[in-house]
Amino acid sequence: MEYLHVDTAVAQESKRPLAPCGDAFFCRRTIYHTTLIVCDGIGSGVRAHVASQMNVSRLAQLLEGGVSLRDAFMSVVETVSGWRDVTMPFSAFSVARIIGDGLSTVLCYEMPPPIFIGLQSACVLSGDPLLVRAGVANEYHFRVAPGEGVVLVSDGIVQAGLGGPSAGGWTVQGVERLLSGLLKEDRRPQALANGILSEARSWDGVPSGDDKTVAVALSRPGLVVDVMTGPPSVKESDGQTVRDFMARDGIKVVCGATTAEIVARHINKDVEVEQRTYSLSTPPRYFIRGIELVTEGVVTLNQALRILGEDVRAKYDRSAAADLAALFQEADFIRFLVGGASNPVNEDLVYVKQGILARDRVVLLLSEELKKKGKLVSVENV
Image (cartoon, rainbow, N blue to C red; front, side, top):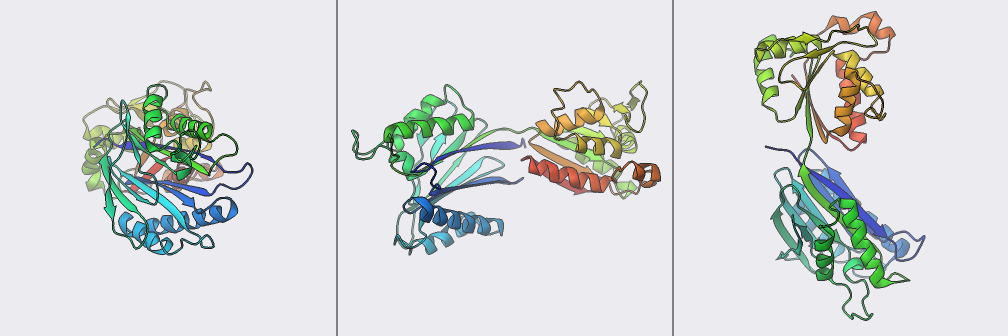
């Protein structure tokens, strides 16, 4: 199944300049799903900011603790529904989750309905009511395909201009109409969020009527890179490991001379070595028909780690390490398949003196750095 990547963006504005925003936003992407939360604290200013941050943190904590989306939502609703007094940290909130196959759920408590982003236009979604102690809660189910997504907004957006020339304010239908037009101009999530916020601001004028938040999630085919490095710990599993690796749908990368030989043998291809002078600082590149990139192992991985923060495409460097780092930078999801067989060469003092980390250590550090850059990473040991 093709990996569906969800790009997200948020645009916010406080009711008063320099004051903290009374809305809060949270986004977390995992290999299984992408989750967005928008909380709208009661009132504005510091009190609203504290309320929204507290409730978005509680909801996020429940979700990350393994509580289901519905149960986490209902737990927070049960608490805040009794906090309608301005002295209490009440907040309205919406939470959206898009899983890997595009199946999506949005749960809203005292919030405007979500707006679906289609390929040609936008539409306000119709939901099913949920029974709660006090207030209004709704549940929405839909599926997104590449190029589709969802928008969450706070009251400050749909109620912009309330009491002005248009007594009812901008309304969610107004947002829907604007979004349909924006989709024909610039479909990037940040451009959509900024466009909606800008229009809401024009409805309000100065001063702003309320804190405003627009959160956009837009799906697209994700770029996956599959990296196999190191022979499997059990030699008898070589064939199955290679078959599993080749069955994956990402860009194929093999790191390691021995690993390359194993892969080539099991897919009935030859390994060719790049015809150039190479050394510890410039390890060789290999070629296997059907594999996008084949490199030396730990040295190349270490070099890729060191240059991961560089703009490697802008610098004329045709090394295997630069190509590997560029793939990491461009990918949305990197999946490592790490063999556990011992390799005494990697523990040689020549490597140690050069500061070259062993395979398991460098993959761990690469994983951490890639996650910091917003990439999804999985590591499977074989």
